[in-house]
Amino acid sequence: MLIKNLPKRNCFGRIFIRMIFDGIAGVRFLLQGKLAFTWAIVKAHFSFYQKARYFYKKRKTISYENYYALNSIVWQYFFRSRKLFSSLKFINKK
Image 1 (tube, rainbow, N blue to C red):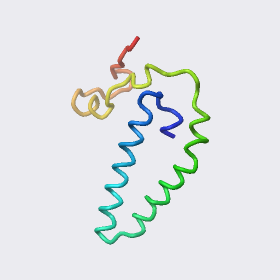
Image 2 (image 1 turned 45 degrees about the vertical axis):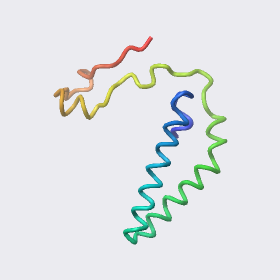
Image 3 (image 1 turned 180 degrees about the vertical axis):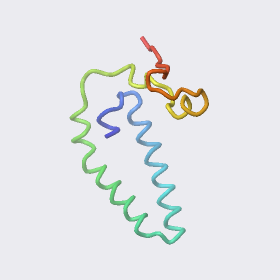
């Protein structure tokens, strides 16, 4: 779903980093002898490669500049003590 929903300028870099992390996790699982986990990652990658063009075509033509209008919710919850959604601070990028 990243390829469908991320803004074009962030899409491919984020997917590339995500694939690298998946690869690292796959090698780690392989070294730990968890072949089922490694195989699941390999299958997910092949599924992504097969469906990437389909999801790319479903992208909206409008680029959402304010896609990341909210900094980390985890950071705001634990370190800024903002416990309610209404107290979260959003970024205005215009």
